Image 1 (cartoon, rainbow over the protein chains, first blue to last red):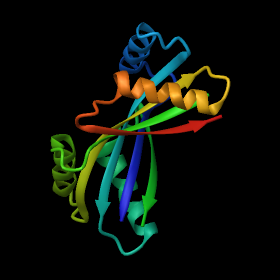
Image 2: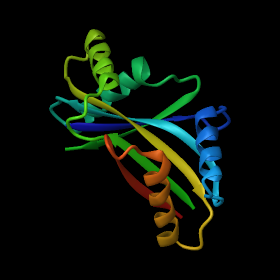
Image 3: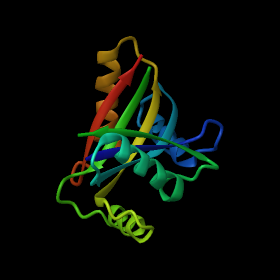
Amino acid sequence: MRAKVHIRLKAGVHDPQGRAIANALIGLGFDEVGEVRQGKLIELDVDADDAPTARARVEEMCRRLLANPVIETYAIDLEA
Amino acid sequence: MRAKVHIRLKAGVHDPQGRAIANALIGLGFDEVGEVRQGKLIELDVDADDAPTARARVEEMCRRLLANPVIETYAIDLEA
């Protein structure tokens, strides 16, 4: 099974990378750009019997390693 | 309008970050993990009259700044 994990900075957490991207885009003439936030996309192959098991395990991976709960949130999408 | 841009390494491009995450997960006992790939998730607020215009502009941003076409692919999702 393939899991996609989206990791985002929580609202209100300062995002200097996003800010730098926004400034660079505006410098290139993309004046229509407002706020930019940069997160991570982690794609994992997971060997599991069924989707609920895979989701529970990937949630545990997020809590223990992939995301920093102080400043980040995560969302999991599963593909068969 | 809000655009989500997923930036992934092309298949075959070596991904040491993904490899490090896989090794760390296996070290924590997540033996069911296979390949791990790490990409980027960039979320942008874009001021545009309609979705086709927004998509065309974000595609141009990807080509000019956000993605490295030699080693990366990108996918754009638009939200109203």
